Image (cartoon, rainbow, N blue to C red):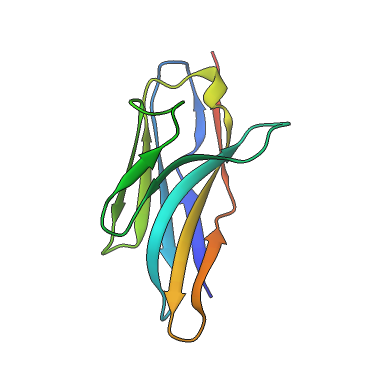
Length: 120
């Protein structure tokens, strides 16, 4: 089965930085598009950033220029470097990945989420 394990969340002051990591694993699986989404209390889950297997990135307007998504294909890991954090970035951040295997084809998976709180 596929597992996405996130780490790196926490409490940070406005203007600070955090780096999230998401390690994907699954015997017999390869990983395609990977990304980060977030959900603030009382709001819908929204896209933060995505990266294809070839490294093409996409960002939400609200984070472009402040956040950087990257991936290490050898480790099946995706990162989100978050700089100049604002209180409105407070949310649970979820890792998302497309995983492919010979037997299941392509399916989409979610991590369990990691809390990011931006507050003074």
